Image (tube, rainbow, N blue to C red; front, side, top):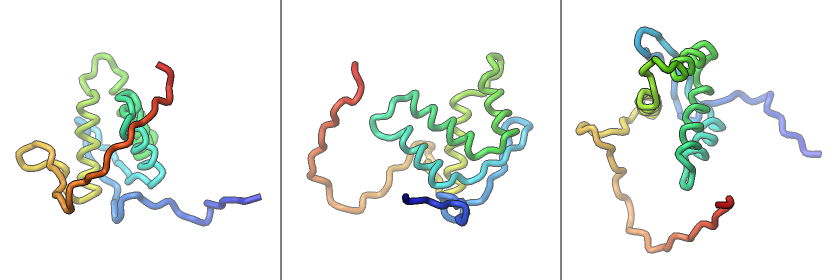
Length: 138
């Protein structure tokens, strides 16, 4: 029987040379640890092409759960669940964008505040896109 052993390995960040990032939400300091490749893989699957908006939100929350220690995770989740607290999805999106910018060491937005497009590096594709068959009833 094939056996896969992980104990001898150490978990590495999916983002090369990434370090934990300390930041504040209001007066509370939190530390976000760089995601490992498995966390990024699950996040990308949740937000990938064809994913529903609900799966995208679940992917973001799952990734945040994985990069925070338990007390920081409880803090942000508690704020999200508090009906009277204005902390919400827009705040979470800004936090995610900030963390990804910091870990990748390159901003994802241009100075104008609009999203920057990656530079074109090759010829236009002439391949036709394959249609995707529905996998769920409906």
